[in-house]
Length: 310
Image (cartoon, rainbow, N blue to C red):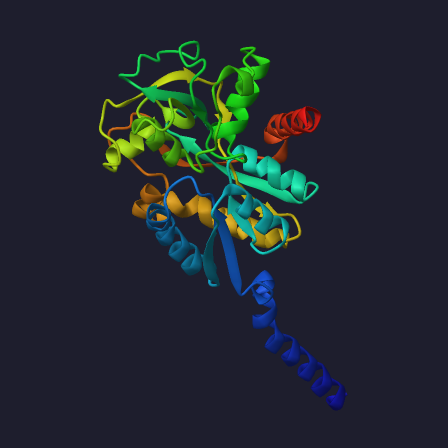
């Protein structure tokens, strides 16, 4: 009886000794977590905005966290599809691109939530205020810049709306339709006269790409004016690979949800907080794949259209 008790005690002690390692769960397999961010701003501003968030996640999760960025949107999409990164902060269209590239192997969890309860933004077309271009009709025959082929507001939504809602075929309507490479590059090109108009995004009339560029001193106030606005687009989501452990996805999602209260200044940097914005981003709300299905369908429409035109 005594020897049986010793064996039992030894087994229990071995089990107890193994508990701390087991309790780490997913962290045993993911000592480094990489999250990707899109190239809709210059590298310096992107790092300034995301570095404090990276440090916060590292401290909250107890694992090393690294930022991954690429020269274009597709680089981030391909990185998550190739299992090179675990998470990506994507736009709606680049989420749809990742969803398609992975055959549904990604899942959205969170989007930014604004003070008024909205979870979306708009694609807009901008022109120089002094150009005489006040509408898309005035832009006919001019050079129009899209941002990036995988940008929701900088390409997919305006292109889709031009054709399906406004009966405008960009290839014929404009003199040329180059890709600027990023939202900021498109707006800067309009400001310096390289492009007549450009597609970009804004959250409100006072908060968007060109408004941020004014604030950063990249362009002067009153130079850029919007001439068209799309229907609302759901914010781009924090996106995870579905082949990650479920508790890992949940733990990181919860850490992000806690950010606004845990580190308000880090959150303000992440959302490019502007004290004058009447409708700032105040937190996150949960989303699922169904919310983005129309974007997946829109991308499918765009793909078929490209195939048919070749």
